[in-house]
Length: 314
Image 1 (cartoon, rainbow, N blue to C red):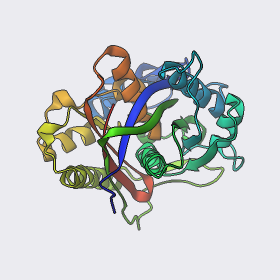
Image 2 (tube, rainbow, N blue to C red):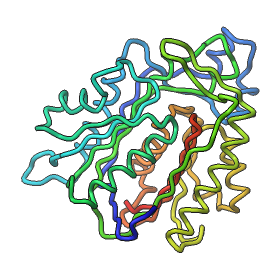
Image 3 (tube, helix red, strand yellow):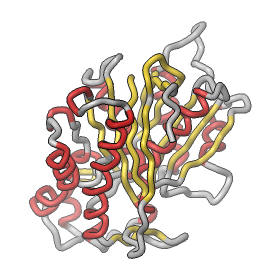
């Protein structure tokens, strides 16, 4: 259910990535695979993986980068009165990652909460931010997506370990002057297609995840475009969750999108779950593709099975 008066503007972006780069060639040393096989089936060439870096370190790197690039007031870092963290690979049952971030940043009493919507986490978190901002309950929200998927990855399973990476990315958002629209949903998963038990490793049934993704993502995109009374041609950028190049290509084909409007970042960063969308936004801002006033459609899909899409301006 949408309130047509919702607005949202992303003020700034930032990322915090571990320095260790693991290439497909590195996996050739330990797995029955090749660089050619991985690139052909996934589009991934390398990924960032943690060595000893804790999840909070990644999250703080992204948060500080986003806050540091936000418009300053009075020469000081802009105030934040709400922190939302998204992660599918938390290192603590409690306290919440958002509270750890708020404490480490020295923020004065922000409202903090975690979102566990896996690869759709950023889309869900930003939507919650939009509602709090428009309700007047917050003036500026820091949304941080942070993942250490290496902690739940079975590195003997070539079908999964080649896909995932670590990292963090963040945005600072406030109430804007242009409409914001969203469509969030969850599909049943009787086959338990993608899961990780507490203390265990990730298990994925690739065919089930693929079938869900190529169906659910287009549904979410079409639904949010309809809510906004827009067509695909009205969107400047389609920032999709970077799960697999075959999934992205299927979504492009099903929706008849202009491939030039669909940025790809998985070749260098693989799939760090909820991080992929804000990471892509930050990389686009850094290289100049992301410009003020552009209309962005973001879409996520992942375990749960969660999916959703939003239209906003930067």
